Amino acid sequence: MIRKPTDGERQEWRRDFEAAARRTLEQRMKYAFIKTYKPIMDDAKFRAFDTMEEYRRWCEENLPRWLGYHRV
Image (cartoon, rainbow, N blue to C red):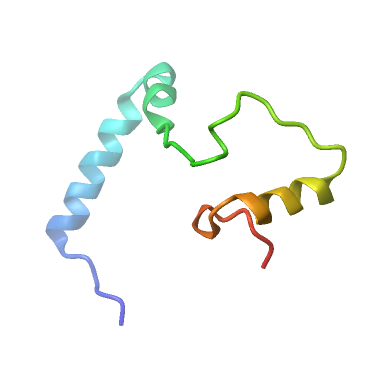
């Protein structure tokens, strides 16, 4: 069951949207990306693979599933 937002919630969303629309592009870019440490992925400065298959195999063998780099 999906709950319908209240009028107060809709007004708050509109205020947030309008505030965001007034920001400069520089401000939007500054706050648009959040750096999150990803175990193993962020532990080396550079990795290269000869094929996509090698990359996928490396992901499945080395990365935790919750990062989302495993094949379905």
